[in-house]
Amino acid sequence: MQMTMLDKIWNAHFVARRLDGREMIYVDRHILHDLHAPHAFEKLDQAGRPVRRPDLTWSVLDHTVATKPGRDEFTNPDGASFQQAMRAGSRRNNIRLFDLHDPEQGISHVVAPELGLVLPGATHAVPDSHACTVGGLGALGLGCGTSELEHILATQTIALKRPKSLRVTLQGGLQKYVSAKDVALRILALHGTSFGRGFAIEYAGPVARALSVEARMTLCNLTIEMGARSGFIAPDDLTYEYLAACAYAPRGAQWEAALRQWSHVCSDPDAAFDCDLSVDCAGLAPQITWGIDQGQTIGLDEAIPHPDAAGGREKAERAFAYMGLEPGRPIAGTKIDRVFIGSCTNARLSDLRAAAEILRGRKAAPGVIALVVPGSSIVKRAAEREGLDEIFKQAGFAWGESGCSMCAGGNGDRGLPQERIVSTTNRNFEGRQGKGVRTHLAGPEVAAASAIAGCIADPRHM
Image (cartoon, rainbow, N blue to C red; front, side):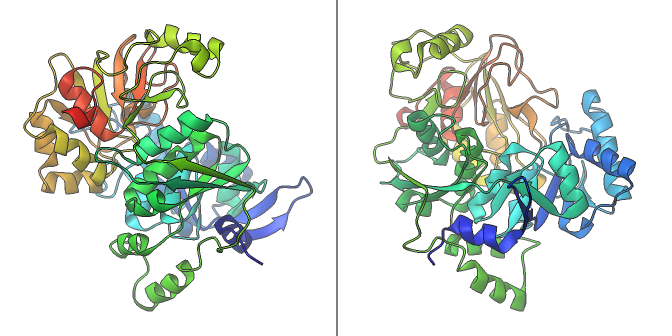
């Protein structure tokens, strides 16, 4: 029988079917973060239950940590109790913690892939909706809530309704300064933020295959914004080359055995999908959001749409009111106040290199507040070895310590009411980056170009 990649991973991890129709799936690896794990630890303690597999579980501090140089747990006072509870819970349960000053500290979805904690064909659970990021390595990422997190810690399984399979074939090729972020935003512009509900998405086609592993993670990261819980790309030689350098990846005979196993983590040639979509990426321009969800996206060479052409008048008018924009005007040239480069979407080394290439020898426009936060301490050190930090600082950017930072503002990094931000994060909802803050999502190249221009700018025209 011909099987999809989803079929193969799901069947290999199937444990049992519950009376309510959900299926118990074994979890290979599990990453905890400081925002939700303390509550789950508390619930386990109250029930007198231990963590079943602490050897397959890791903890990170990312959501509540300050990003200011020289930080400690009290630099962000609101996060201190979360960090203390995370340390205590991890210590009680014998879980390895990537603490604030650990050389491997960082955002969970950045740390796990770069260390090789997540591998092709594996199931990988995180109490965060962007667990799907690890699909860039060919793994099945499973975001979970606090109750599910407690269940995984106690049983090393998760109960889920089996998703249907959706293949998104990316045709054509990408021009210079057009990235995986632009591909994801284009998909959202075409199909909206709910078309993937009930599905797991497999990205295929020449564009997906040509993306670097880090770019694949960016694409998969935004799968949750399409309504799907999981998204992935079949592993290949690029994946294996990436993993070969990872500290926790298999070695020796185990590596050879793993390669043989990973070669089968793909959809069979004649596998039947429940749904198929195709997206033409030829001629795609850099993309940017203009509204208050990711589906409200246009190319940088386009004008802001009129309400009747924006996917629903009521929603569009709400977006216009919040964002302070006028339909019919070009999006390029819109004045901005801030630029943020960071998050689990676009804070890997390749993202920082792309932004630094544009910023080299240039400066952010007067009045623009600019911040770049590496996705992990490993990324930060690598960028500093290459001198990228100096390029950012000379351009007028603040160079932060690793953490989630302005993605959701959980560490105190927020904008001010009515400030307009070009951000490389994943959500542009009302108030996401601070009360009244107007967020435009874009890739690192667009963010860098906009910082220089002081307005939304196309990197192709710099």
